[in-house]
Image (cartoon, rainbow, N blue to C red):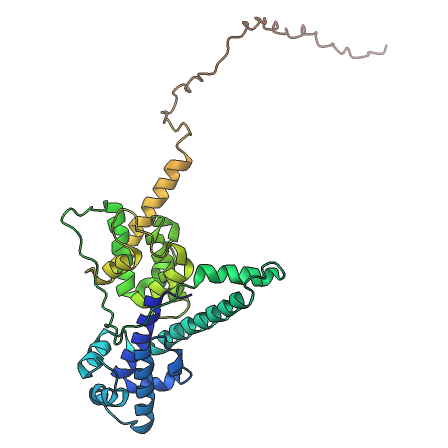
Length: 341
């Protein structure tokens, strides 16, 4: 089941983007109001669709007042809708956020179906192993999302304030955080960096997971922002989503919020990414060749004697063979001419 906070943020992203650019609703005609989990968002989505149908030329500046009148939701006024629009990500990516809402709705429907299966099989465990597995899965994944408060506050990425005794990460981890912050805030360089910077160069844990999520979202053609990356991190490993990040007191959502609000120079990920990769390669070489004797020897020096040399009996002395003497020279035969009388 999708994390309720992430589902709520995806719904607010869709509504906020539609408030800023109402014509974007035409791109997500398949998304009906019943796909929204929160009743406030269902009412707002209904009012947006009706307004788009009946008043297609209404400018975005008048949309908050018009939606307030149509929705008539307690605690929802024009000021609330303007804050919702300001907090929304980029409107041109409304289709991506709508797919997240649709995914969360499908997961809720599946969880409800499994819950019904569990109810009908109560007291009959064992006849059907498939039903047993589904029921056990439902027991693990059905913490009901409580969307009872009306008009939830618009999401803003605020990093949790740290205490006075902040634990500073070492330079290596700080460099990795800077790369992730740059890629998250300026995703134009994601494909360039991911072509040569492998995930294993990052510290195991939240940093590696965030980098992998950024790369996966970019390769999928989705917008790389705080919502989509956090959604992918949760999708990859829901059980560890709220485990505390190493060398910090922040949980993953707070860690991502800090990356999204950290001031970085555009393109610094390319430079620091090269340093991270070079550092990881050096560490691998030191680990792979640490047990090999690499003592340098100058030309002509004797090799280093082995400490495992064992005593042996002296080798017998072998006398060299005498030099062979050349054969004695033979006198050349004298040829006497034959004289006839």
